[in-house]
Picture (cartoon, each protein chain N blue to C red):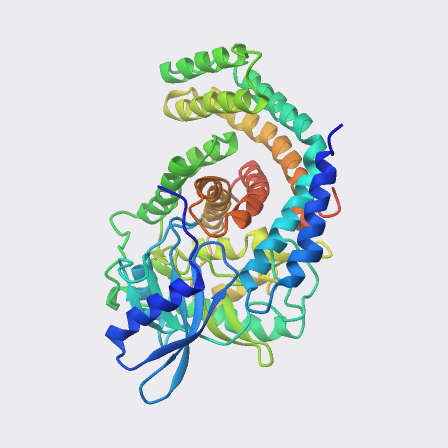
Length: 353
Length: 162
């Protein structure tokens, strides 16, 4: 495939006009602005003014040719629909599943006001976002409550046509998780890595059973929700593209990744909110679910493994192919692979509890 | 005499930082973000540049050490033994024209086959030996990589250890 032609704002203005001419006759779009952040989707904010004069802000999320996470806009759209009224999430409004108008698959969702990190930067702490007090105290409760509500979501009664339920056997949940990422790694890795290969074999030999399926987010952490800085209220949980029907331990392990939190005088806080044991206790109490340390260890290995596959495999390959608009970011974050390989060594040396 | 790569990179960083970045208006958020990222990237590359050839040689040295260690013990099944023979050949097949990177990739491919083959038919003793060896040597290797990339600013645990 040829290099990706990064979208100009003028192209998006024209595409939006075409899109709404058919769907909302009489409406006009304005204030189309590219949005930064993230490492995968092209995003533009715009205002849509209806025939009656009412104006509303929306976010256009569209695929580049390839991304560090290869996901489906329709699937993300379905999740956002399903979450309405359950967990704060942006309302999905329109979908261009095939990219007929925008050239690439795209979804338009309601724009939500809020921030992903304090406007005044706090202490720097690696990859994690420093919230500090009093925000930490305000966000702890909602962060946990929304996670618990999400895991309790009754996916069997929801309209989720793009999701499959891994209930053929107790290990299918973990197997699907491993197979999804190893397929990507096998297709995308630039060169083999002994620890990645060893960890892959270890995961295949140690697939845990899932006792109770849960709806999982896949990338739940500080940085992936919008909050109101004054009240500390979470106004929207973002980035649902990796959501699946799986095992709640997968989200917990991701949240507890050293790279998803902050280090404060040698003490780790997941998402800068909870110390690990405090988080596990709080989750068990709030959800009524059990946290099995052996299963949690397995998903910690998978978390480090898929993180490495993303940044060192897919990210580098698509930057080489020039298939994304964030090549410079992708090659920069590839340097984090060493952290994830280090985590794999540590986790596998220590072993499951 | 040619201008040094360090001087050239320094001038590019200065131009991007002091001329290009301030010229962006408020609407150019992502352009500003990407130029800022490019500057940070160039700063890291500038700091690593002189040490890069030695670093790649050390990576090769570590791959050879792992390959040699995996050959010290009998493997067990036919697949594992065949993969070990390929690894032994890869270790001997250094040719002068190959770069350290090419040699390392070739060795890591052969190591990859050994790990996969031993999972299929390696003896229990070999699999345990392989696990200990890979984890021990890869821990050393990844620590060096983390130190090398600590300048990126992502690895909180390595911040004081550069």
